[in-house]
Amino acid sequence: MHRNDVRGHTGGIIVAAEEADFWGLATYPASHRDVVVTGNTVRRCKGKRDAANHVGSGIIVAQTEGALVESNLAEDCGENSTNNAGPVGIWAWDAIGVVIRKNTTLRQRSARSDGGGFDLDGGCKDCVLEYNFSMGCTGPGIIIFSFDDTAYPNKLLDYSNNVARYNLSVRDGQTVRSEFGMFIGTMRPVGSDFQNIRVYNNTIVTDTVGAFSPTCLSIQTFGGVDFSHATGVIANNIFLQKGAGLLCDVRTTAMQIHGNCFHSVQGTAMRSFGFDWETVDQWISASGNKEFLHGTHTIFVDNPQLVNDSGSTPADFRPANSSPLYGVGMDINAEFGIARPTEDYLGNALPATQRFFTPGAMEPATPLPNLLTSPNVLNTGWELNDIDLISGLPACSAAHRRRT
Image (cartoon, rainbow, N blue to C red; front, side, top):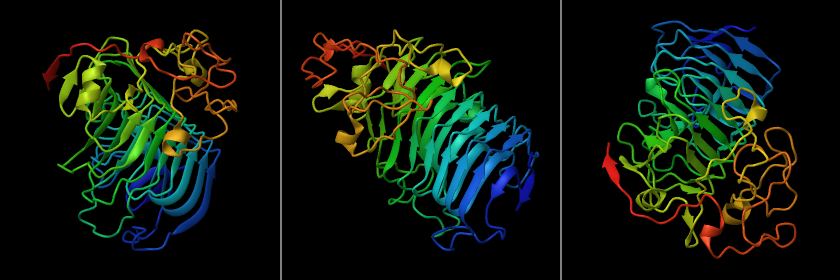
């Protein structure tokens, strides 16, 4: 059990500059280097009401170059936080080369904003979120965000080269101010910010919990910030919406979005720039040809058929033996130059052959049959000439939209 108070930021474990003004790695050298935070439990660090800064986080790493945050648990924190810059279970900001991996955040709370599971926030560069599990938080399970530093010019490094991969978020986004499963966005009005962001092979499962129906994936800006400069790839993820919330809300044309499984059990809409679309074809067109590459659809829309998508342990969210997902993802190395790691969330080796790409954070327990008419998956792979050969690809049809 840990408790700390740094510059009014009450939290569990806080690695940060001691002096209030000594932050901003574009201005000051790192206060800490080669930090290791591992094997800790932070529990019931609730924060305090009306605090001037964010309070109630489990673990924070900032003003740091090089850190490993691994195998920690943060649970039931942040309940008393009322600051707009809310707490997060485990996160980094103003940091270089921080790796946050194999951690768990349960029931992170905030009475206002944030309250999410894991976050790479403003000023992060070359940082990684991988193999983390978030469940039951009031905010997003995964946050990729750059905050507005207009009042502090030239202090933050540009947000760049950050990665979120093989993470699992379950029933997060249980509050009206941060009602998302995964949130990607910015408030920083700097054209060189938010570059080369890679978000791949995550599993995000949202559901209606009480009065809240979170959006499964949200990509947007605040404060009128233009997001057209952002670059990056969002690929081979599972976005499973079980509740009444939107399947996605995408408000950028710059980032590449391909090879993902988008499925809503209740058939809820996909939103693009304020319009809700009832068919995938029109959403693809309206979003600037997201999920459309080399003249064909790259999206998968059937139910991913996880072992138990209402479960509470990570293994519940592995593709079941009946899942149609096996092999329908994209070759992210060939398309985007992204090298996959060697294992999935559960520690299972990824297939040695680069022809097998399964969306989500976990490989199936055994190789699953694909649904092509003439597979040949064990040798030379396949050539795809007809998109209707794969179950789950959308059929072309007329669409309707409604302004929100």
